[in-house]
Image 1 (spheres, rainbow, N blue to C red):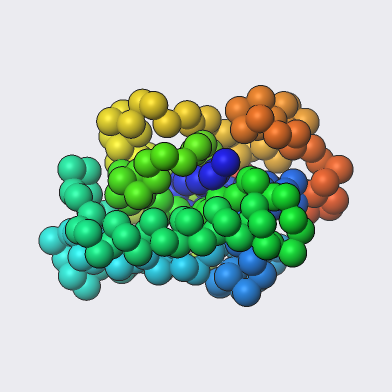
Image 2: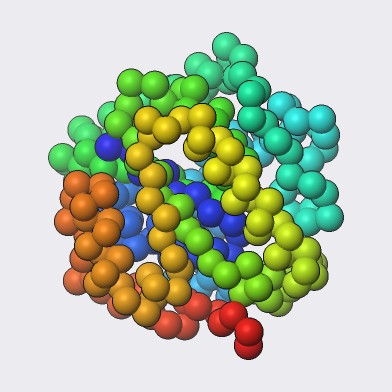
Length: 236
């Protein structure tokens, strides 16, 4: 089972991927995680740099801007819907997916893991490309939602981005993600509200357990989740 975490930057994707990782849905090896924990995310980003690298390459290669960088917030995110991976990129993606599929099943240090995935806000822009390489695999998509104003405030505090631009980008990211998912209705997906995740984690655990088909609980994550993860509340 492959679990993909998507959502706008500062929407709680790191919190969700870390929580899933603690519950045995492996988001990568420790050596894969980059960036390392920072002040803005002291518990870690749980972002596999190998998947992030491919996302960045595809966003430049398959868009009209060969110099596109995600965190140049003034630029409009590329619309890749309808784009097709070339043979080389499709093979590269399949090799990466097959590597982790076998690694966590057979030789991941904790033999028997059959659940793994990756997280990257860029998935909102590239998911339709990944689906081309994921044929034949069992996939679930977990989508983090958060009030756009809260995302805007969080981006302003940590990045060179105005609150309004953060709000606009949040809506654009979700629109692009939903456009891609609409063409892949055979892929199960679940929307998780970040505030509910933090405030009522047991309820979210029930939803995730049913959706993924694996027990997800607070005990497995220890003290990973706390209300300090919600850096900005809407309207404050």
